[in-house]
Length: 345
Image (cartoon, rainbow, N blue to C red; front, side, top):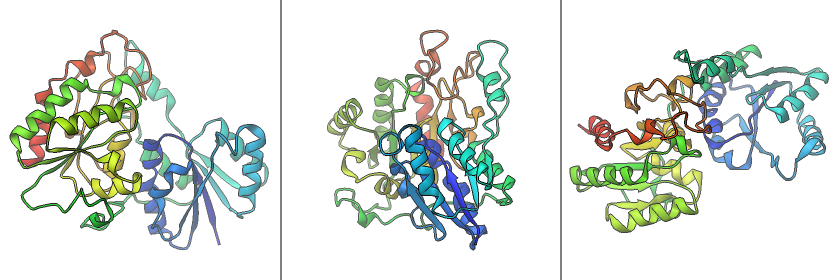
């Protein structure tokens, strides 16, 4: 039996974007065994897929450095893979795929279209052309190995969504008259975060427009939690969902029942996309043209300013060319509210 190894070690959003491709593969090749190798946090993404197995690798501790990678390779070798798909193409995965290639395995790796992204993000004479999406790039790797796929993924859950009864009782059941709104105001880099004081105005306006709505806030720990807790305390409609839920699996369940998710260009945009929830996404230093829009999301739901300096970065991790982050700061909060209203009205 053919046994395919798929490798990707990276941030949550990049790994989440694998799921529509891997799920389509599993559905269309039921006799193919597939193992996904990634960081431990990614396990919930791939649970429930019949012919997909997940393998966690802690590359910063247990498999650190070349000795660690050699140990990981020996562990992988025992699984009797026939094909290896490198969805990451970084130093660690290059080394692993080289070992497999030298061992006579069929190997293929992702083309990230780095040149096109450089032209898109350079300071002058930008070439603003849509780059192939991550989904297309992942699917291309599989095609080179002889597994072309039609990307037909819809959601990790059935049409009715995940089981709300698995969540803390404070979440409760969704009432017919309620609108459930998710808000994920944070991202990994400053150039991708809408000013928090303006986001609070968005919350105030949404509550004014929809007094019976429930707003579920998503974010991490530390200062992020302080902000979300403060909003939850100040607005009765708000709840810090991430502080109440038990990890990604629970968050996916709740997101599957949202009417809309309001998110930055961040991992939460991709989580909501995996459960078929429509996302109003806010873009600053980055741009959908780089290929990282959420699965099946609409370009018209992206809130962004047309500025000659945008985008200045693929991932939002570079300093602002202008120094004032006008790409985010100049977005009127009412513009975001209007995008949400379009979905409801």
